[in-house]
Structures are given as structure tokens and as C-alpha cells.
Image 1 (cartoon, rainbow, N blue to C red):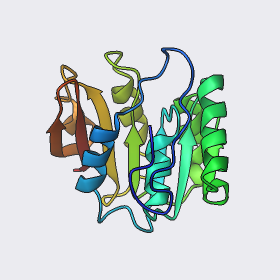
Image 2: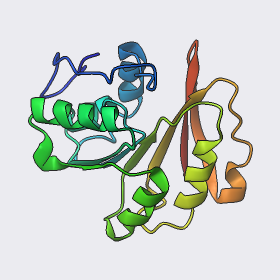
Image 3: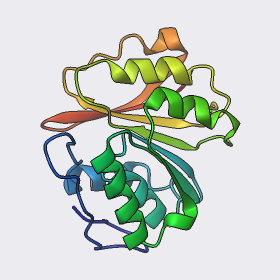
Length: 183
């Protein structure tokens, strides 16, 4: 696992030990960031279910202004902290070691996010719970791009009921990215 591009290009990142996280592969990460390349510079980025922090770190390396990382698992949280220190990105980062519900409420006074990325555990409908919470948050605007990494069989037929619309979908062999905006 490495940083693909930007100021920290080529830097290897630590991954949490064990099978509790599924790091996004470098190939999928590169495809994702090629798709959002023009949205990342100067963006305010939210990385939910951060794991190693590699997605938010990639965004910061590519010029995002700041990133908030949310990770409740102790090993993964420690990994995010170490990776941010190694990449010298702690000044532009905030790391929250709390569950996503508490984090989304704690961020109530945060400025609007340009990009929200979430990679929750698959097939547990956690992304739906997150989207239900994001529906009325002031830091989610009509311009905020929400990206969900999910299993191929995860359905998103409910998003219009929550006030979101799917603007793009990218399928891979084992998973997919769904791109959402407020409807």
C-alpha cells in the first residue's frame, strides 16, 4: 500500500494488523483519484471508516486543504496516526477515534466538506445509516461529493428518499464506488 501521487508519491503506508480492515487496492485507489482529480486540490475531505487512512492521505498528498479521519478501531486509529506522522500531514489533519454516529454529530460546527469518502464494513447497511445522518447536516451541501465504497451487491435504491442522487457508479471486479450528491 502506497501513496500514488502528489507530494508524498511512492511513500509506503502501514496497514492495521489482522483481518478487520480491507485496504483499498492501489489500482482501485488510482482509478478513484483519477475520477476526482479536479475536485481534490484545496478540498476539505472527510474519510469515514478510515482504516489505515490511505484515502485521506492520498487526498492530502494531492493537494486537499485538510482532512478529517474517523476510525473507531484502536489498531486502525494508531495506524492512521502513524501514517499521518510519517507523511508529515498532521497539521492538516484531525483524527477522531469514535464511532461514525458520534463523529458526524461532533462535526456539527465543521465547515462544509467538499468530499466525503466512506468505506464501511460491507453488507451491513452501515452506509445507509451514514447517509440518513448526513441528510440534514449543514456541512453537506449541494456541492459535496459523497463517495461510498461497497460490495457489488449493495443496493442504493433508497438514496432518493434521503435527498441524494447517484451521479456516477464505477464497478470493479470485487466492489464498487457510488458517487452521490444532494438531489
